[in-house]
Image (cartoon, rainbow, N blue to C red; front, side, top):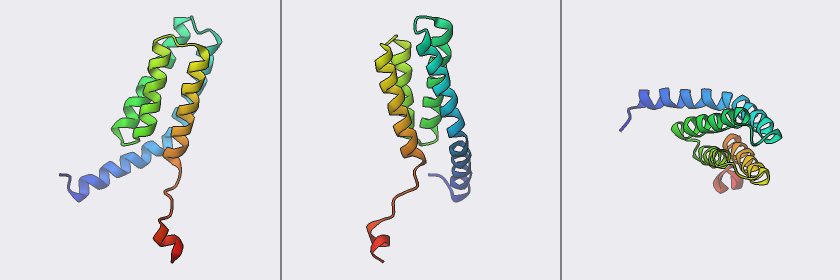
Length: 114
């Protein structure tokens, strides 16, 4: 079990990653778009696979599980040479997971009724 000081350090790292996520996701989107322009070109596909893999691992490590799963799904689609429409769907899922990840927590019913 983690002590309070370690939990605080991990939470600080998580907040720092959350600040970097918009840039990481935007960069990955750009790389995937370039890949979709020439999907058969390994020079375009590999950076997209690598970027998806990196985001999947980083997000998962820091507890952004939905985002990590979406990035992993995109990685698999890209690695397996899926049709562009499937990759677009994977990118849409990544965007959805990203939006949920950064959304402020919903107020609880108790807070709303107070």
